[in-house]
Amino acid sequence: MKPLKDLVRLNIWDLAPYSSARNEYSGHVAHVFLDANENPYNSPFNRYPDPLQLEVKALLSKIKGVPVENIFLGNGSDEAIDLAYRVFCSPDQDNAVAIEPTYGMYKVCADINDVEYRPVLLDADYQITAEKLLSACDEKTKLIWICSPNNPTANNINREEIVEILRGFQGIVVVDEAYSDFSRQQTFRSELGKYANLIVLNTMSKAWGAAAIRLGMAFASKDIIDLFNKVKYPYNVNLLTQKQAIEALRDPYQVQDWVKAILNERTRLVCAFRDLPCVMKVYPTDANFFLAKMTDAQGIYDYLVRMGIVVRNRTRVSLCGNCLRITVGTKSENNELLSALRSM
Ligand code: PMP
Image (tube, rainbow, N blue to C red; front, side, top):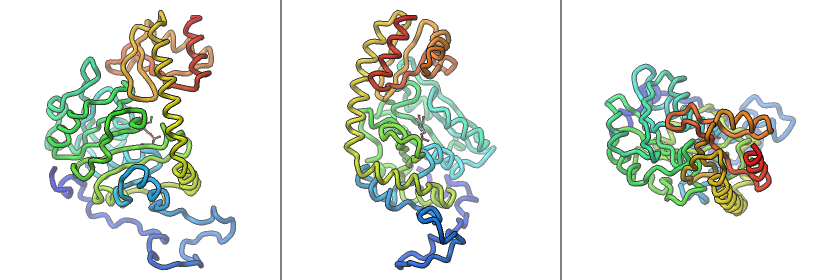
């Protein structure tokens, strides 16, 4: 990896960040707060929340096995995706390389930040070689995006290829493991000490059943986390989200039960799909969803919508012609989907 200073935008490296009232008095126990122009009434909502969310991070640190100083929390992992561009990519100069197809926000955030986005097609098994991905990079490539398990294809990207990319690339590699709780592949979170150029993304929106609270996380070296914290909005994670996250993180066993139930239903749903006349192929899945090639994705999608059932039509996405992406629901939701497809 190049020295971090050579990868970060100069204006960000030199940035003097906003210093919030709550950042400045650390080391003392205070009880009168006349520092932040808040209203003294309407507790607890009158007060700004902890800008660094330390109580949430202390719980996460134990569950994820990552030290607090290596954790960034954001308004969904989408915030971390955008921050990666704002920290590392100079608009109209630098570029980012990603597998294709993949999660759409990597490209949207590149476009918003005026950064060239270079998609590299997966093969027919939805895999990529390190060699192919690295050959799309040049001296202006600051970021590589790898989503594993990948959205929308649902499969893990081969771990050895990701390792080779981490070793072979001089810039930052973001491994988005939003769906890793559903997968048996070893997470890259535990490899932060090995790769200084690694950022791993996780979210509360999937296995943790908390998409509504908007809490995503990035795990990386302390130097990278410090840069993210410098650029983020001062109070980017609100009090209600922090409170709800703390409650959820105190009961991690509930998540294991949900994951087990979802994986059981996934097996049942995938088997049933294989027997449906309107299904041509079900692709292998390591996530809480799967991709199915249909006889007529658009027609079936429209039919399901008319029945009040919404799936994701991916037919216009590269390598996903005639494919629907199906999220695994509850047993009764899945049964409703199956009976609708059987009575088409
Ligand atoms: N990464 C991937 C691969 C996703 O599929 C999604 C959401 N669909 C996200 C990140 C964004 O998650 P969050 O809700 O944490 O913003």
